[in-house]
Amino acid sequence: MRFLILGRSDTWYTRDLQRAAGTDHHVVSCSFERLAASVGPHGTRIIAELGALENWDGVLVRSMPLGSLEQVVFRMDVLGGLEQAGCTVLNPPRALEAAIDKYLALDRLARAGLHVPRTFVCQSWRDAMDAFAQLDSDAVLKPLFGSEGRGLTRLTDEAIAFRAFKMLEQAGAVIYLQQYIEHPGYDIRLFVVGRQVLGMRRRNAEDWRTNVSRGAVAEPITVTASLAETAQRASQALGATLAGVDLLPARDGTSYVIEVNAVPGWKALARTLHTDVARLVLEHLAQHGGEERP
View (tube, one colour):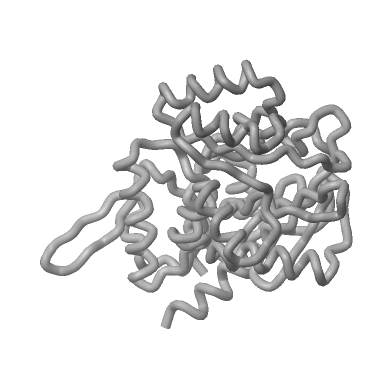
């Protein structure tokens, strides 16, 4: 089958997918910046340097680069157009939009009955200071759009929080403030690929942030039925069938769903579990491609 990877050609993930494809599939990459479309009397065509994309068996989104509002909206429109043309897109644009927006994602997770941290989202420093007080002056400030722990700041000082909130309001930013959860020094990453769920523990003795990119050590875990159910419910709440679900166990025994990543990485997971995750991703894409195309 012919699969297109939306992402840079020089990344480890593109190379890993091409390795896993072997001779079974033809896998090539294309950057989001090269996407274009033509609309005319004969319909709409989604094009890139590879030609028309509607006839590909599947498209795997491996990155979501920064861009202007116009660029981001157009890229989502293009992915939606590919879906309408019968091309499998993983993940679907609606799932990508929900996962990228932390507020929207958390709202859907909460509505699905999952445990999420107490969170306030506002636009003024005054409202943020009120929220900070309600969170007992111990909260995590997060960018609304962001990943891999970038931009996360723990606030415990009222004066510092005030300056941070004022700066964000002046920049026209949305202030996303979440309760700080006391945890045992690790979180759990559950990787959903179709009906399968893989898992690892990410432990960091030096930092309250547990991202592998920030020095956390990954350890294999046994995915229990309960963990698998939580991961599937979380990914389904956002409409994703390929997802990284982050759980944070609190010291009181509650396990909180912190985030769902609809463009999940698997480099540390594959190394930790000694599993060909890229192969599982391609098998999932092939299964959906076979279902969608006539």
